[in-house]
Image (tube, rainbow, N blue to C red; front, side, top):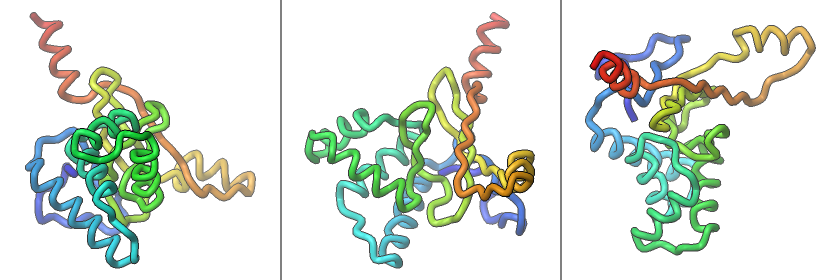
Length: 180
């Protein structure tokens, strides 16, 4: 995946990682690194990283945008896997359950996780024009939501934050067209 931090720089302890998804990067290295991390995590946790699960993750990594299950199924079928919906849904269920992918509720679609293996509360920045998605970190327990939860005695277990807007590439195109 991509990151706004320069290569070799470590995140500051206690800080949230930079958003991932809109900046230019070495895409081949991005995919290879994420697949290697997934394989390593599966081996360490005794999980079966089957060929169809690996292919599904690889497709999501290559896209850098949210994909619907049927789009993924079509791509899996083109790569020689079954054409029945359970093929895609089982792979996606595994990827989501083990933190390799996230479901984007607003789009009813899936995206590869930018921080697999890390406990985090992602916030998704969704471009309404091209469906590109960047994964940023949220800290719901530290903000107004956390304060409201504490005030009522509620314990937050999971949050889904999805912001709709325009990505830098689409904004640049729109600005250029407006100026023409």
